[in-house]
Image (cartoon, rainbow, N blue to C red; front, side, top):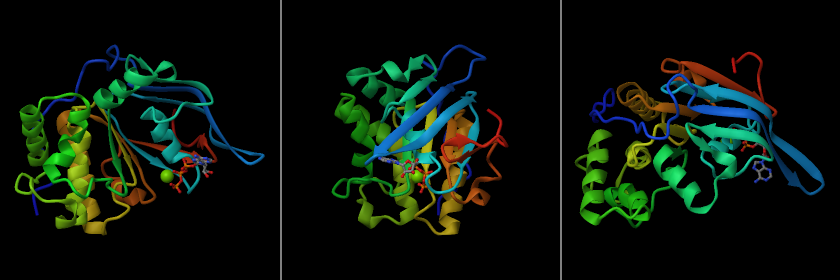
Amino acid sequence: MPDSSSVSSSTAATNGTGTPGSPLVRFDQVTKTYTRGQTPVHALDDVNLEIPEGQFVGVVGPSGSGKSTLLYMLAAMDQPTAGSISVGDWKLNTLTGDAQARYRRTMIGMIFQQFHLVPTMTAQENVALPMILAGVAPETRNDRAAECLEMVGLGDRLDHRPAELSGGEQQRVATARALVGDPPLLLADEPTGNLDSETGAQIVDLLASVHREQNRTVLVVTHHFDEIEHVTERVVRLRDGRIDPGSPE
Ligand SMILES: Nc1ncnc2c1ncn2[C@@H]1O[C@H](COP(=O)(O)OP(=O)(O)OP(=O)(O)O)[C@@H](O)[C@H]1O
Ligand SMILES: [Mg+2]
């Protein structure tokens, strides 16, 4: 197994991350209401949150408390019903079309419980995929994808397809893909949920080293806080779409 305690050095993007001293992430009275039939569901309910650049944040709370919704809002995959969200110089409420795509490509890396790799593509092709959408030339994107796979300890698995990789290795490929655009903000939704505890611990170590050595801001949603407690600098507790008063804003 590769040493997951460190990653080769790289620097998180500094463009668009705002003025020094101001928080990287800011939620101002954010509400997200879904309507199911006649019943409104307040997935987020008046959330105020500031996260400084470079923090490792654990997001916890019962099922249905709004954890994934919080991440999706940050990834500009959905718009709040009320309130505003900013990430660095980006005001997410006003983003549409090309700007939204550019925001996601340059500012956000996302990791999911289910890996979401393309089964017919090799590890290198999967990692290079976001750069195709960004119009990066083939040689450059292949080199960058290989570099990111080496960073996560998979330099010897470039040509493997997902079915030829272990679960932990697939999540490393997904992590490499999330890092390929050098984003300042890394969002992980239950990244260890499909892994055994030992493999999960290696992924947590990988995220911790990406945070520590590359100064990236990391938000990890988890039902197993004990798995990330040792690397978490801040805990945001959600309950019924609200931030629990126990966790500082
Ligand atoms: N697209 C949607 N349409 C309607 N309701 C939704 C939608 N997405 C989420 N919800 C509701 O919003 C609430 C928050 O959902 P969310 O997925 O953010 O919870 P979660 O904390 O991530 O839960 P889990 O730990 O089970 O993943 C839930 O009550 C959910 O049913
Ligand atoms: Mg969820």
